[in-house]
Length: 169
Image 1: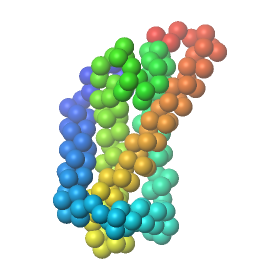
Image 2 (image 1 turned 120 degrees about the vertical axis):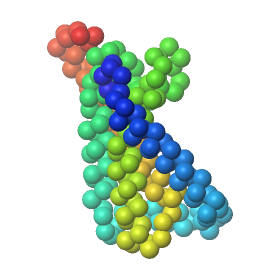
Image 3 (image 1 turned 30 degrees about the vertical axis):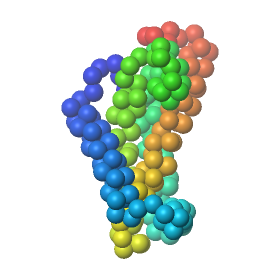
Image 4 (image 1 turned 90 degrees about the vertical axis):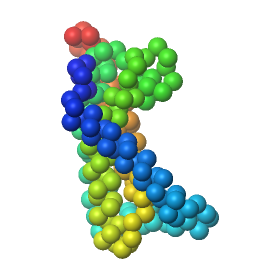
């Protein structure tokens, strides 16, 4: 993300993704509860998604996360920021708003992941499990985003050092 303030559409999409994630989590717990049977079905359903219809999303969602992470990682290297995920959560000297920046960057990918898993569940399972949809969006979009952003930031930092480029420009 650039240093400019995010657009109102980006902020609205972020709030939609965060709100929808919270609603899905609460809805899933209230509707299905949490027992050992539910836990086993949950993980069996998660691993069953690797095979069968719509497996293309196991490639599409991480690629989308990588596309979102690319400019953010380069901007981190230019600004001299440390690894995004660690500095956003545990570095008190990091600028405020780093976590918000990550949420804004991943909102589209999370919404895409949620919608793809809803389609998958109704097509294959004939049911909807909100917790599973949320877990798939996290596994296929959010985690890859943080990993790709870190890789891009490290590679860009190396590239700028090699070229002697001013990283703050």
